[in-house]
Image (cartoon, rainbow, N blue to C red; front, side, top):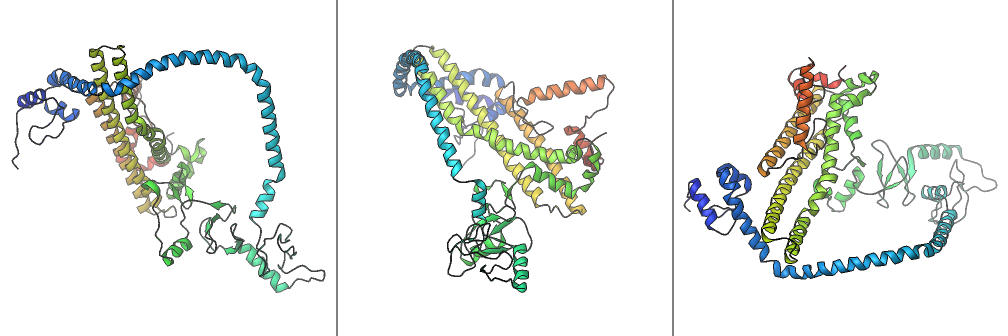
Length: 479
């Protein structure tokens, strides 16, 4: 296939001569706004192509007007219904005083039902049943209560030797020692009552008999990810596969959800030097290296739950906005030129939101890889290799944050926005990163005018200076 080329003027003429978005005249690939801004004249993009694109977009929306007519009719009907709703609300307000007495009666009954439910059993009784020992009698499937009486065969057993407690019962000293040792080193499974011994390792246990996961410390049954070696041996022996963590996200380690405290514990164990700063009011939490890693983790969670959720509704919101504009046009609430302007603005808004969301997605993925590497560092290993690995990760984190902010600023420039997202020096969502930069610049100027020294503590520049000169400054709060 031959590859062709054309001058800027030819490309602009070709684009305006065709009733479609900007594209290559040879391979027909669509050119986005960034490509047009960088390769075509800004005057043409801001004037002729803008008008050309508006005409294309409005023609697309005109073709959807017949299918939008039912929504216009529905809008008129909605207006009438809203009027009826107002009348109904007035009637409801009039009747509310009459209904109040009945509502109070219903509430009284509901509270009484709740008291009855909570009065039939207590949490102490439930816990006692959950942690009772299995009946020692082989033919019995019951469990022992706190008084060591089986709830099924109703036989009573000696707490010291676990033999049936008859009137003439005398404990066997050897059995007493055995039972004492077993009770010290084992606990009953909350699922089946089978005694399970714990030699070492973490709190997460797994019963080989009933396949229940539970906490050794509390006895509570656990759900979710299982990392117990017996569990994986069971999967291998039964030919089962191990399911990966949903979505590949960093959620748990040793059965406990990773939090900023998890990251903190790793840092202070690999860098015990930070504990020496407990004389400082904020203690080890004030250490710059602790703030750096825990701040990155909190930003990772913020991206997951507070930012990415907007992506789920962005496309649907855009379609609803376009449909609303079509309805307004059909009902003669806006003229065609105004409609054309709205369509063009909505298309630009969607492109900008998509660009921002893609940048946040990249940040989420890379932050997850940072967390994986941090957790992989052994907290018990305080040798120089572990320290250097965390310092290396921290440098990469700072470089990547700068890259992300640069991408946001570039997108802001492409779409002509007055604001854009970004990550601050203390790892928070800036909201308006451009305004944040201006505020930081003003503060720097004030410090210079007052004869102060830059950079300020904990800023990006301060961290970079520590990496370049003396990274041990990261272990203690500036005095």
